[in-house]
Length: 138
Image (cartoon, rainbow, N blue to C red):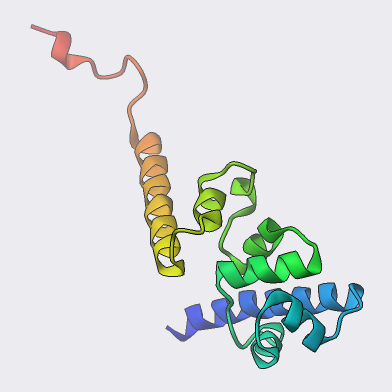
C-alpha cells in the first residue's frame, strides 16, 4: 500500500512543481493565482508542495488562470494518458461536463478505462480471421 502512495506522491509532487514553474513564469504570486483560480491560498500552496491532489475541476480553474491547457495539467496529474489527450476524446468530454459531479466524472473515467483494458485484452486473445471455423464442418 505504501508503494502506491509513493507513486501518487511522486505524480502529485511533479504536478505541484510544474504548477509553481508556470506561476513563476507568469509572474504571479501564490495569492494572485489563488484569487484568479478561485481557490484558497493555503490549498494552492499545498498543491504546489505536492501535499494535495487537486480535482479535475480545480485543475481547470488553475489552467484558466495561468492561461495554459487544462489537458496538459490532466496529463501531468495522471487523469489523462498522453496518447488519449486528443481533442474530442471521451475523457475530455466527461471532464468538461458541468452537469456531472467530480465523483461521477471519476466513476465514468474508471468504467471507460476498464472497458478499454478489457477490449485490449480481448483483441490480443481473439483468434485470427478464418482460424478455427469448426462450426462449418458436418
